[in-house]
Length: 230
Image (tube, rainbow, N blue to C red):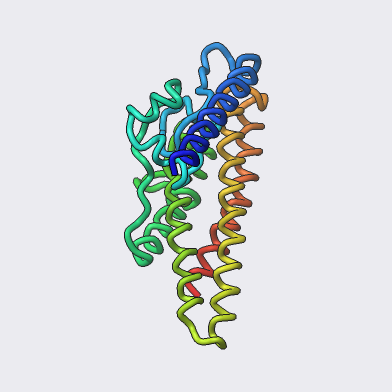
């Protein structure tokens, strides 16, 4: 109803204000003069200034406030608008895209002409490009994973009691790996931002920390994909 809608709007505006003020205060003392960073960004914004900063979560409950430049400007005028991240249309499309995202993030091309993955870009010291690519990949993994997990739970509800338990465990196990994966990718994003802004010391030290977190993210991605394809 109207009262609940007003309450949600106030909460959204308050959240945005808190993020902008606290994050701006933190970055003002740590970001190098030549490395400006946004206080917050929408998920799906691949601007270099969004690397390592707070991302507004992909949430149907707040989409009404960010669905257009005009609505976003009313509640958070300091945040750059980008289109909402659209989920894949079907489970099959989601599974196919998951494989593509896994390659884009972790694959080794072997020195060929293929597009370099996030992992390869980090290895070559191209941290900003790695961060930009991660800004593209993470929101896609978010919506792809949601479609897959929702489908797994739907399979569970449509199954007989004997197979329902197996599907239930499969959906739950997939969801655990998915949540861990997103957590690790968030850590990678933060570390890349810190490395780019010179907060992790020399580039090599930044690379080592990012690669370690990427390794853990890759393990969760592989486990998630394995469960989905069972």
